Image 1 (cartoon, rainbow, N blue to C red):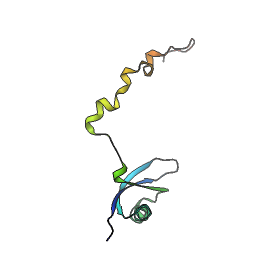
Image 2: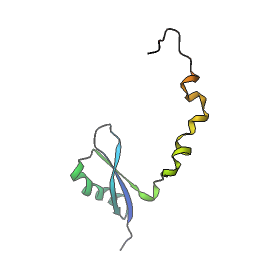
Image 3: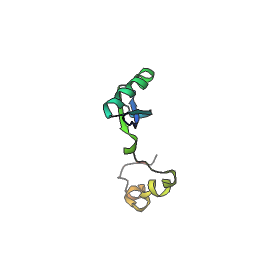
Image 4: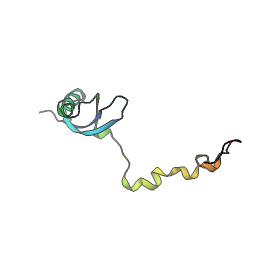
Length: 93
């Protein structure tokens, strides 16, 4: 028997919408993963598009990374509103 690989399944449910994670499937290759995803998830959700990605190819941040990873903008003053001048004729609301 051929070893199967775990794939993550992402569905696009609305035209122009983002692909959202729907679950996982196991398959021996990419085409089989797409077919398995269709068989499992298309009946329930009626997607417009299906993406399958090998789980081993996904890299994510860890919960402990929230401070250093997501807050690097403090050292860039051009991202702060005080860096920009308000043009003449514009009122504060």
